Amino acid sequence: MAVSVTIECVVKMFGAYTALKDVSLGVLPGELFFLLGPSGCGKTTLLRCIAGFYRPDSGRILIGDEEVTARPPHRRDTGMMFQSYALWPHMTVEENVAFGLEMRKVPRAESRRRVGEALELVHLADRAKARPNQLSGGQQQRVALARALVIRPRCLLLDEPLSNLDAKLRLEMRMEIRRICKQAGLTAIYVTHDQKEALSAADRLAVMRDGKIEQTGTPEEVYRAPSNRFVAGFIGEGTFIEGRIETLERLGVRVSTRIGTLRAASAPQGMSTGDRVTLCLRPESLCLSPPPEEPSDNLLRGQFIESAYLGEVAQHRIGVPSADGSASCVLTAVELNPVAGRRREGEPTSVWVPPEHVIVTPF
Image (cartoon, rainbow, N blue to C red; front, side, top):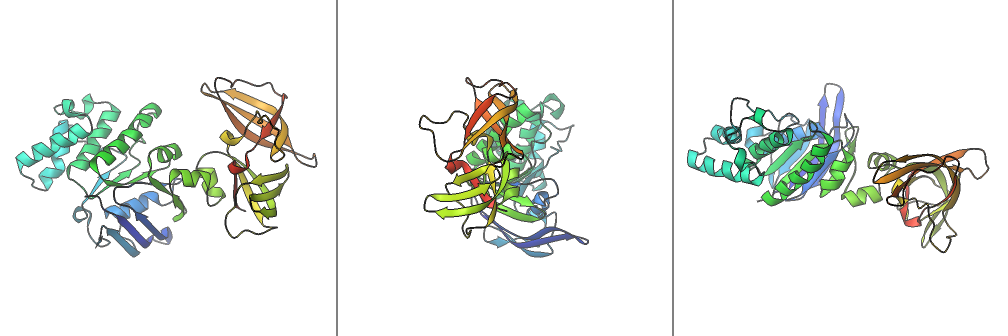
C-alpha cells in the first residue's frame, strides 16, 4: 500500500555549512515526486536524510504515520536506487535482484516468486540468467530498479538514476520508470537536475536552491506560473525583461518595459502599481505571425539576428529596439515545422506575445 512521506522543518549541517535550511515537504501516497535543482542545492542530501544515510540536525521525517528520523536505513522500508547501479558482476540478473531478499532471510520459494514478478515488471524475465556485462546500460538500470522493488518498499528513492545513460536512452527510460512505479503502486521520490526529465515524468515536483525549496507544484503549475525569476529560468528557457507595473486591471496588469508596455493576463498576489517586476517570455509563446486582426497589445517590431534550423523546430534570435531607440532587446523564439526554416539576418518581423503567456515574477 502506498504511503505518504512528510518532511517537517529539516535542517542538516556539515560542519559550519548548512546543506538543508528548514525544509518542509509533503509527498502524497502513490505520487511520483521529483526533487529538482542545480548541483549543490541540497536535493541529494534531502533524499539521503529520507533514506536514513544522514540524520537531520533538527526536524522530523515521517513515512506514513511513523516517524523514522532516528531509524537506521534498514528499518525504514525504503528502496534506494543510486546513480551507479552497483550490480554484482559475478552474479546473474536474478541473483542480483534476489540479494536483498536473501539478506532479509526470505524463504527461497517466496524469493523466487518475487524475483520473477519484479523481472516481469521491468520486462527482463527473459534475461534472468544473464550477467551484467551481457546487458545494455538501460537493461542494467532496470535490474537495479527490480532489485529496489523486490523488497516491496513503502517508498522508492531514486538518486539521478539515468545520469549514466545516453540522451536517447534517458528519454526512453524516464517514462519506463514512471510506468513501473505506477504499475507497482509505489510512492517514489526522484532526484534530478534534468528539467525535461522532471517535467515529463513527475506528478509534482519541488525546485530547490541553496538548501531551500523555492516552489512546489505540478509541472504545469511550476512552468506556467513560476514563483520567482530563478524558478522561471531553471524550468525551461525564456527572455527576461525588467519593468514596473503601470496599472492593475480586471483583465490583467500592464507593465512598462524598455521595449514598451506589455500586458499580462495575471500577476502574483500582493503586487501594487509602481512595483518593480521581471517578465519572462517563453520562446514557444512568441508568435511570429500575428492573428488576422492585429492586436493592440504586445505587438513588437524587430528583425532577425540569427536563425538555426534544428529539424523539428527552427530557433530564432530577434532584436527588438527599445522604446527610446537606445538599445536592442534580444528575444528567442521557436517555430514548429513544416513552416519553420532559417530566416535571413536583418529580415524584419513582427512578434506578438499573447497576454496569457506573459509571466510576471517579483523583481
